[in-house]
Image 1 (cartoon, one colour):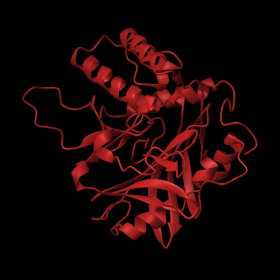
Image 2 (image 1 turned 180 degrees about the horizontal axis):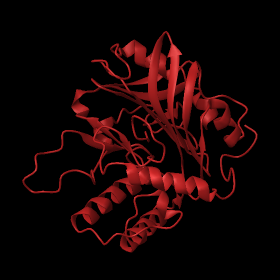
Image 3 (image 1 turned 135 degrees about the vertical axis):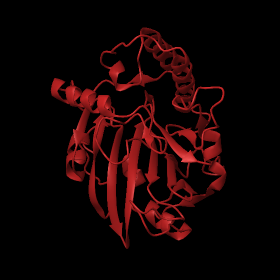
Image 4 (image 1 turned 30 degrees about the vertical axis):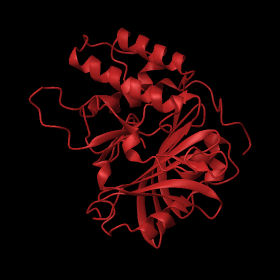
Length: 301
């Protein structure tokens, strides 16, 4: 690592913000099975993404808390009193249940849900609030209040990348994070937080969404997981000695890591039933553990 994860680069160019706004404007109001917030880049799934930690000092090194403890309010669920219950629970991807990042994310989802019930007139947020789901002055003030109370910073700049090498160049990294990576593209924030849609080939082809979220910053990231009761969950220690939480579901899998300076969340686009579009072959326990070995968590910090 050549530089600190923080303050990686200067102000984002106006051309990227224009592209980001155009992409956001073209998206539907809700994508019930996709990660939310990281939605600037066009892809089959709309971005954003779980948790893992070093064996020493890790939040879940000895305690499996599971996906159910990460459920937050879904701001995009049906708000009609006669609507049927949501078919998929929404979880926050930044932080473990007692962390300030998770608590802030949970409160922010509550605020967005409340705002949906009584929407304000159309209003355009300015940078950096345009990086979040801020649609009114009241929501902007609420976001400031929540993040200040939990001691979190808002993201200020963002850059996109289209390859593994470009990602490392933006971060100033000497150590690689991925192995057998055939392709990855996404975007990086000023503090080293990033999201990427990736493909790795290691015996089988793994399609996934990978997110690193710096501690002390607020990343608006959530994921629909279906019914958390349908997941088999366990702790797994990688060969490099990092303990990760693995959640094996019927249609997707979630890998989570709580590292010293960041949270990592990976959404594997296949499960025990396989997926006709992304990963047709079923994922097994051993397959998910093999997948976890593809990442160098120590280098992610």
